[in-house]
Length: 268
Length: 214
Image (cartoon, rainbow over all chains, first blue to last red):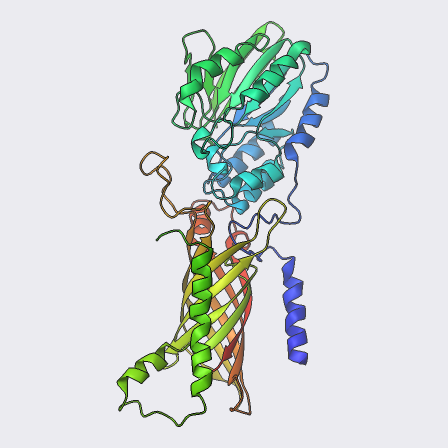
């Protein structure tokens, strides 16, 4: 009997331990993993950028299975990159949709000296990844305002759903358009761009027409394709900037000024 | 492998429990000469030799099942059903595990106590849930994702202590306590080329009890 008691005591001591894993897809977040990260960080960003004319942000994307490279980026950023207001992650934290992949990635990115905001990637939806993403980061479609620019962040990974979810969500877009009177300019960010196999290409022209209803659409941002690419996908003057993967040690630096914007492709 | 539904889970449970029932009736009878009745010997071999329960270990919060010893006690095969509790975002799930153990050494500590310093092997685990697939569903281009979300392969090492009961006429002949460290294919793929990930990130700890019945 005593042996049983000792055994169970031992067992309960370990319940809180990192090594206890019920299942790779159990969705049970470790007790020290933050939730609602996007909301918290957006509040920080909006207050940092409240009355700034010039806004500088970095876009990184597709950090899956590149923990070493991501950590190098965070160290480089914290030690030698200044005057950047926030970081935008283009999605694909996980490769297999595993809960632990999200936790590992956030453990590294939470060390950044500026707040970061995250889009959902197709690999983040696999298994029960979507539930983990929503718990950790929040809604998959959201917007935030920095200075006079509104960022529209969208889930465009339509291939992962069976028409059960509207991807891209036009109701969300129309609502945001109606709410955009106060912001002068708009940037639309997504994981998979129109034309990509993930995108619902049946509505890509409609999508383009709708996002052009936003006040002065500056450009669009996307990840997913693992290469730097700048394209005018619809030949209508709206540029789509594709960010490379963290595996290739690259990121975008954008500077938004009252008159326009500049960007740099940087490899480290 | 086809998708497993609730019906097949129930069937599996029934199959796992049935041998015990049939055996409970037989146990009072005179010993059967195995050479004379090869048919009965065959069926006897199918009767599980032990039952096992486990906490954690990447196959469910709690799992339980039966198994067989063979090869002079060096080999054991387990079949376990696991339970993953629901959390705020997802319903509870069931899993099935097929586990192969190899136990190279047994160290007797006393008359009643044995210590097995190493048990190792691998196990396959599958989720009973339609959101997970073995092969990419047809909506994806060919070979879009190169892995299965439903079936995991794990490798493990474990150690265990066995206490042999004084009375050998009871339900259980001995009880073993074990602990186990394991990792799965997808954890290992993440760990390769990433020195950032340490063993504590991708190893999974389990505790369990085994009751030897025969």
